Image 1 (cartoon, rainbow, N blue to C red):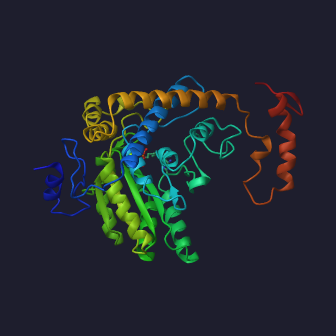
Image 2: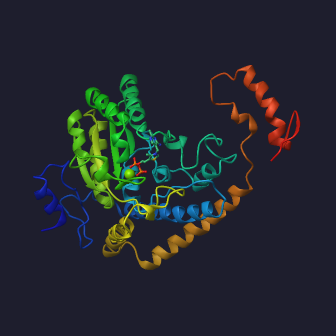
Image 3: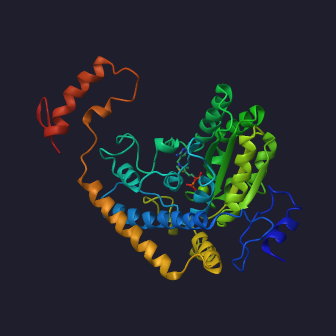
Amino acid sequence: MTATTTAAVRSGGAPDLGLFRVLRDDGTADPATDPCLSDADLIRLHTQMLLIRTLDERCLRLQRQGRIAFYGTSTGQEAATVGSAFCLEAEDWCFPALREGGAALMRGMPVSRYIAQLMGNAHDEEKGHQQPMHFSWRGANHVSLSSPIGTQIPQAVGCARAMQVAGATGRVVLGFIGDGGTSEPDFHVGLTFAGVWKCPVVVVCQNNGWAISVPTSAQTASPTIAVKGRGYGIPSVRVDGNDILAVVKVTRDAISRARRGEGPTFIEAVTYRRHGHSSSDDPTRYRDPAEVERWEKNDPVERFRAHLVARGLWSAEAETAEIDRQNEMVTREIQEAEKAAPPSLDTIIEDVTEFVRPELREQLAEVRPFFEEGKTAEGAFPL
Ligand SMILES: Cc1ncc(C[n+]2csc(CCOP(=O)(O)OP(=O)(O)O)c2C)c(N)n1
Ligand SMILES: [Mg+2]
């Protein structure tokens, strides 16, 4: 019996209690559920997952070297991020949670912008207003995350509702949340309205096992996270988040339903956060290394690589060449980003309110010498 059928039997066939998979344990795809992507798309999915891993390694090192202030990896979660973002069109909207910078990259955000955001330099889309890891990309309607967890869901549902009201049929919104975020009131408010209004929204919960140091088992007594969607009348499905083909299949089906005006879907992608919560965290303080080792054996990138190799689309040599190419490109982009100027000082008061009040201009004039020359009206600033 395959793992897919085992999960289906255990759940009595309920999609919100089982674990939907396409990739079988031997690396082949189940023909009954395979989304049947083109060879070019399969390779694109893989190289996008590799890119997240390359950036995670390089940027965490930048943080350790004191060259950026903060970083949070999504290592181990690449399939859930790339697979779901892959299903969007450029005109659709995305409201990411903490670990979906890779969704913006998948949808065309240049690596230079990713690094500019981490450094908050003049090329940063957000002009240094946001903390690192709060990526946004206008080119694909990828909206910067608001730091309070769970807020993404009312935002995503509100955006989808606005599309309904404006008659923008056929457009959809993808909203992300973590397992910890599902304990926040905003998640429940968002799903309530999405269900009642039948909004064109797909909510993906990346259940990565942990919310900083709180394990999912302490987060909820619910048998699964997906089953929570039932209470809001929203079709919900639990998917193997480390199986990129399964993620593509369930997200694509959900997005098609939303485009046809058939309402929202809630997806729980079961995955694992392999590293600390962020560069400020030490997970060895609260979790068993054996758990990490178990999940390392269920690596989304390795599983998909094995599948592509078995299909004759990829090889160890192709993988090495791609990672080398990505590392060279990232090195160049970091060098360029470190040469870039900071955002103009005026951006401190611009884009915050529609009209900049005169008092703010006066205050900026007062502090400008400090920023530009290290001086205040009283003289040298004691640094
Ligand atoms: C409302 C709110 N409470 C607490 C925090 C602090 N905080 C930041 S991330 C996080 C855990 C998030 O866990 P989860 O939703 O599972 O996402 P993950 O980090 O695992 O991707 C917490 C508690 C916050 N940002 N917002
Ligand atoms: Mg989590």
